[in-house]
Length: 173
Image (cartoon, rainbow, N blue to C red; front, side, top):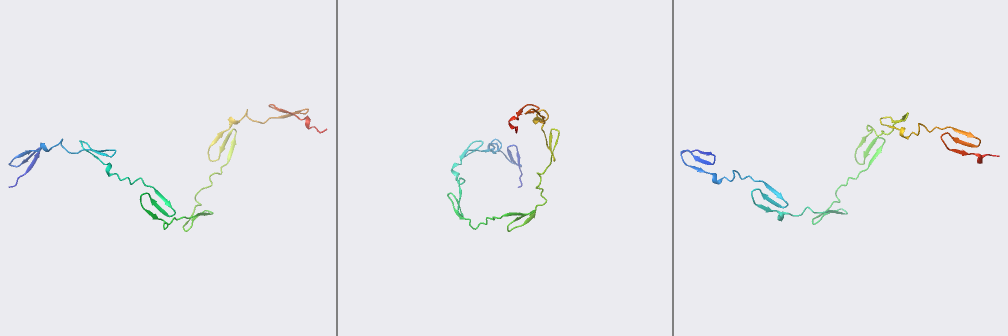
């Protein structure tokens, strides 16, 4: 006897036979709940939690130390690292050839390292750098220029904008 099962809503039926209401097995439609962790407590959305602190192993708080060629981890083992190749090499520059001992050489002539030599020019009160940038120096200019005339009257030497010197003490009689 071939019979077919069918489900409509919460009712399971068999062809040409009985049906069963399954709603008593349905808890809010699903049993999907969210988990959350707060501190060391894992909590299920609709109730129930587990304290996970008993599963902590505290092995992450360890310190490495090196004594000679012995590398040691606290509360752990020691290993002799004397066989580890430190690969200490020296770089040298000959002209434009950069070499590493026991290794290769590369020509670095294509690298432009001479970028500092630029000409300065002064036009009026503006000081300009050859490849860009300028400064207005007018704030440093005291009444346009500092060119003053000197005059001598008798034994007194006088500066045009003020100041003088008595030269009589320097006369050779």
